[in-house]
Length: 96
Image (cartoon, rainbow, N blue to C red; front, top):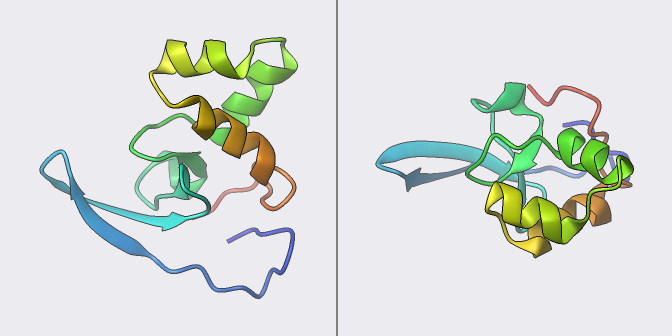
């Protein structure tokens, strides 16, 4: 796990049933996870394939958190969490 702050911190793999299938992930926050089977394990919004890198790219292009939340049907808090955690996790690295 490419964690910028406290790189020795252990992050635990969680497993749950979502949509009738097993969903395994490492929680990076409430909404942001690294799921080994999703987007190469890079940070995504939980239960989606929306990569945290995309969120940052869209925001840099001038989109708002509210706009992204509506467009991608996720809570505004999820978009804000991507911003909040950007200094803790390197979204450009692979989390396989």
